[in-house]
Image (cartoon, rainbow, N blue to C red):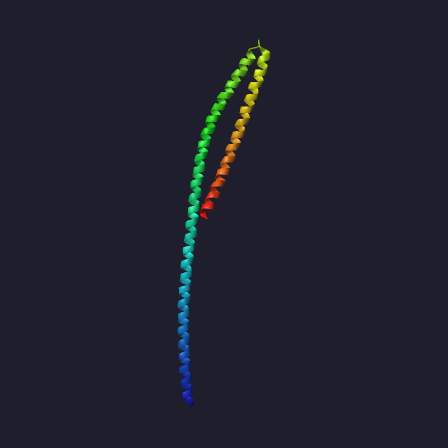
Amino acid sequence: MFKRYLIGAGVCVAVLAGIWGYGQHKYSRGYTTAQTDHQLELAQLNDAARQKELAIQKNYEEMINDAHQQKQVAEAAAADLDAVNSRLRKTISNQAAKLKSASATASAHVSLASCWRVLDESVTEYGKVAKDADGLVERLRAGQGWARAIEQAK
């Protein structure tokens, strides 16, 4: 009779061990599946983030290229204005020289010479202000380009 209990207990232990083994097998498969799904989802999220980053970078580079082209156009215009400025200053210098040589009507020419000097100083200061403004515009374009790239990425 004692053997029957031992056989019954052995069968119960074997059945419980089988159930436990089956559960471990299912758990292991579920864990592996969950791990694989997680890695797949992570890869998809990383790919999406990378694509978004590449789009932002491309957009920003296009804006920088546009700003660079605008800068080249502005520099060409500034060079043209510098040429005009040089011609104007040469004209002012020539007029001032003519006024110095004409001593007969000195009193009228003194005020006219003063006007030419004021015009010359004004042109010089305007050139400095224009160059400062060009530098500020270039920095502003770069900042605006970055802000637009970030805004479009949202």
